[in-house]
Length: 193
Image 1 (tube, rainbow, N blue to C red):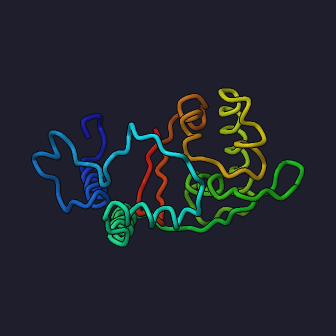
Image 2: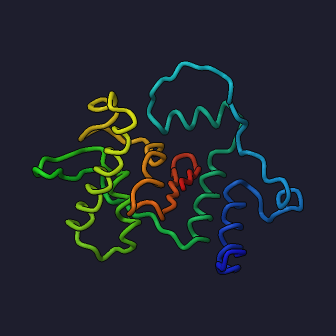
């Protein structure tokens, strides 16, 4: 609000954030220092990485840390309601420029759905916008990591949300965006700017 924004909108967003991290209202400590992480940081610990099914991985993580997964998911649902957001399943397949079917495209389709801000867009507009985002993001990633082509970046390769770091400040269309990714399995949210 100090830069000309609407104070009510800021307070609504702040309250949604506090709900997400498990607080009902801000304390003096949180206003000066900030809230604690919902789960302790594992920074500095080196562990082997195993790719597992997401739902199983999240459940085991919450169980291991004694955290209430159902409460985190409920908090996220409350945040979505507080922000006036809705869940919209836009599928996971799209077509490339040659018309070939591509799988694992849910990230780009969701990004396009949010960018277009509406439910009344034709599927073709959603798909073309998603394909554009895919090409822009992947071009930026491959410019930084050309060796990732075909394995971490490709037509049917599932994208990592971390790829947004490569593009949000560099592409004219995407440079003004902030992206919030809500994980309905863990109740978590990632914000990229």
